[in-house]
Image (cartoon, rainbow, N blue to C red; front, side):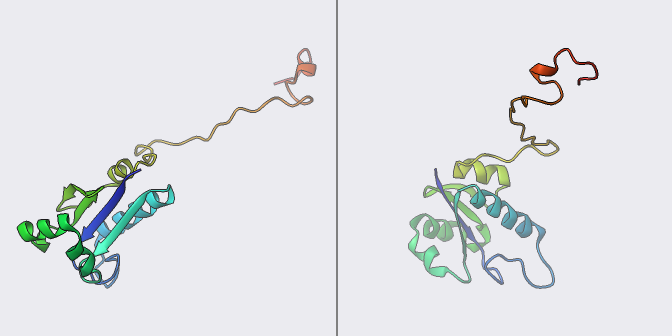
Length: 135
């Protein structure tokens, strides 16, 4: 399983989901992070305004900021390697990078079907094989 780190620009709060004008991209990204974490994914999120020390202590981030500046954020590292810059990954990308089961494709339904054995008595059991009115 890989470690995914997301370095974000300065946001008003840890998630950026605050104030009167909420950015829908941040709402969706927060939900995607929760999804991946709930399946055991190792994902960390850092905000430049509240956690500048992490930015300064991570060599790949320091080098990125030196070249692109904070306007190039967000920056996504997977096991310390740059995977994406300038935008937030979607749920499927996060899941793949974190090594967790990806979400079902949009518009599909997941059916949790399990095999069950027939009851010894009841409709269509072996003892009812010749009975009339059996399913």
